[in-house]
Amino acid sequence: MTVELPFAPVDDIIRRNADGLRVSAGAAEALAARIQDHGAELAEAAAEQATTDGRKTLMATDFGVEQVIEREDVELPVAPVDRIARLRIHDRYRVSMEARIALADILGDYADNVARAAAKLARHADRRTVQADDIETYFELFE
Image (cartoon, rainbow, N blue to C red; front, side):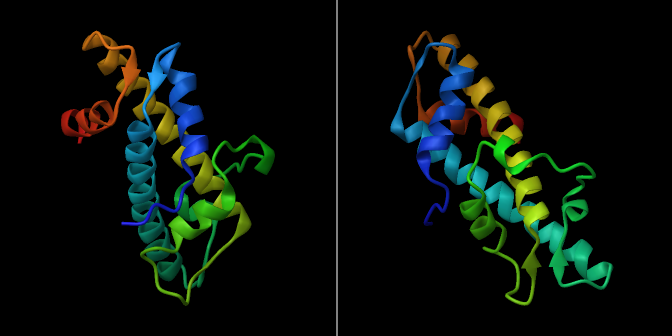
C-alpha cells in the first residue's frame, strides 16, 4: 500500500506526544498508514451520507463536523488528506474544501490519541524510542 501522507507531520505529532522520547522512522510510517486507513474509512461513510442526502459532494457535516477550524490550524497537510479521502470512494464524488479541512482535523486528533498511547507503551517497555511496534500494539489492544 502506498501511503499518501508525508511522514514529517506525523513524526511531529508523535514527537509532541512523546515528551522527550525519540521516534523511529518506522513509527511515523506505521502511524501514517493507520491514519490513511482510518481516513479512507471515514470518507466511505461520508460518501454514503452524501448519497443519502442526494449529493455528490462530501461536506464537513458528512464527517460529523459542524464547526470547521481554520485551514492554518490543521496539522496534517490538506492535499494528501484529500487524496486519502478519495482512495475508496467513487470518482463521481467531490470533496469540498471544508470537508478536507474537517477530515484533516479529525485525523490529527486521531493521530494525537494513538501517539500519546504509543509513547506510554514505549515508556512501559522502558525504552527511549517510540517504535512501530508501539503503534501496532496500540491497535491490537484497543481495536
